[in-house]
View (cartoon, rainbow, N blue to C red):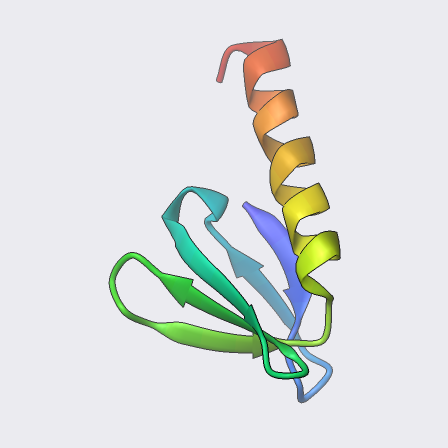
Length: 63
């Protein structure tokens, strides 16, 4: 799970395993595998960094 900020400045927690696509519009538009879409304040680069950090933790702790 990764923490992001919606356009309304409220925290969103998304399952990083379900991210299918990222688009810059200029906000970041996240499309999940189920078709749900979320606009967030973080850049695509920040989101990718958070996903990589999340996956690294999973590998490190064998979760």
